[in-house]
Amino acid sequence: MKIRHLPATASAEEVAMVLGEDGAAIVDCLVDPAVLDRAKRELDPFIAATSFGPDDFAGRRTKRTGALIARSETCRDLVVHPLVLGTVDKVLSHSSSFQLHLTQVISIDPGEPAQKIHRDQWAFAFFPFPKGYEVSCNTLWAMTDFTEEDGATRVIPGSHRFDDRLELDAAETIPAEMKKGSVLLYTGSLYHGAGANRSDHTRRGINITYSVSWLRQEENQYLTVPFETARTLPVDLLRLMGYSRGAYALGYVDDLRDPIEVVRPDLGSSGLGDLDAALERVRSR
Image (cartoon, rainbow, N blue to C red):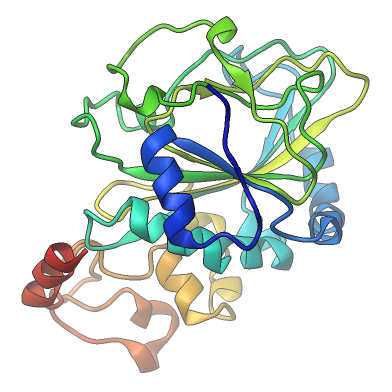
């Protein structure tokens, strides 16, 4: 089974449909390569200072550089890209709301072997979510061309319907090859893993993922993004980061304050939120 490629003109409905059927899709050349070059310039000092992974899963020749909202204005735009958010909204439509889960540049150096095939949703303590119930929707933006030789992410299309906790081999996967500026979207239940980098250059991609808002975020945005930076960010981005009630009551501050009030006192409101409105959102979605 092949990974389906969609044009940059595709709608969120079209991308979400492919994700529902295959668990993965590539949108070709969604942004100009110059956008990724700009992000790289902003992040180069932080990537250079990042250590390689401490174990085989993280990758002993792989760097994982986070805090992208704090460190890169360009990455903030990628986080809120309309096609991505529209797709995530549909893939996670069974939940009343979703949130940013993590931001990370993954740099795979030559000589790194293939990563163990896994599901990203295993981050939630390997909880056996019901088959077909997605709790996260993920993106991997190509900062360089992704080829099989340089370690393009390897996926098993359709594996979002497989049983959980399977031990699968890289031989069962296919590479998500794509051009710089393209983006791979995949569900948290898709079996996948980074490929082996057999080239002479680093394969680099921006991993931005989203989850339903009643689960804990993998990257702690409140501590990752300094308060003085958070106060300057757009309200929609702040709410996506978690400065918002999850579902209708999760995450309030002290005396039932809206978390947005911490950074934007002019926008806060007291209470647990609107239960009837949350129920209606779930029904309508």
